[in-house]
Image (tube, rainbow, N blue to C red; front, top):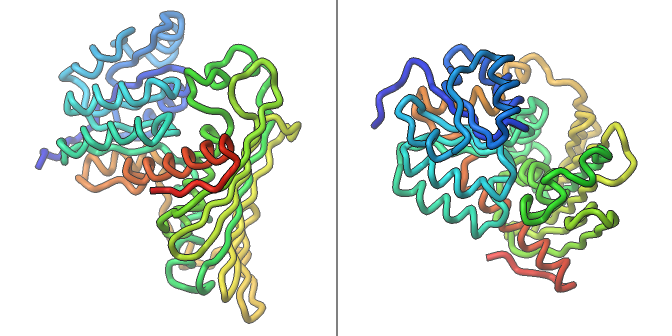
Length: 334
């Protein structure tokens, strides 16, 4: 067992999304940002000036080999998630990986394989919705059986991708991102509804994707249906060229004794009761955020709630949706 550190020294790789990670870790007393890494020296300069982080690298392998780092935050374009994760774990570093965990489940399985040789390493996907207090409450209600046997759920996430991102951003280039809105927003959305339902085993998927933007090589819209071993079904829809500029999110789960809605939070019971606010005992749910959770898992040697095994299963479901869209038929998930 590794000794429990007093502070967790963190290296941030990728200074696009990494800025948000820096702000988040700076708010945690037990975390210290020891180094940053990006191939863009201008980004390094602006971050160094702004946050006073002295050590910087343009090569992630050098950062991963540094003895002065305990953990690595991976915030690069998706295609680099796997190679950086492998490098970090092989060098004994804990990893917090920005979503999606990787571009495909096959790539994610490489991370799983290496991680299994380093049992002390904490490897976590930075899914933020799992730390939403209402989501945690709904998950608890469902696991206690309060809304009965869950048989259906749906989740939607629509937004309008900024025009500035539509031609140049790595997210719209398949070779860099691995996919469009389904992999980007869809990963978080599917992860959330699946987790709230207790992570049932997926059996098959059917889906369709649309690419409406001639400048991109990825999909703008995805709709899918997934069936689970439990008999439950979910549908998810995700779009980023929908002209919904302020974003639209919905999630609802139906059980034999009631239903639960997130955004806006509401639980409706068989006997006609509505729960629209969490009562006093529920407000005791202490919510961390992914960054606090990651640091706490390292400090107290606990397993992260959003582990890479689960991240890999989410990618298996997404892979099956892409395959189904391509082949025009239902695809089984193994």
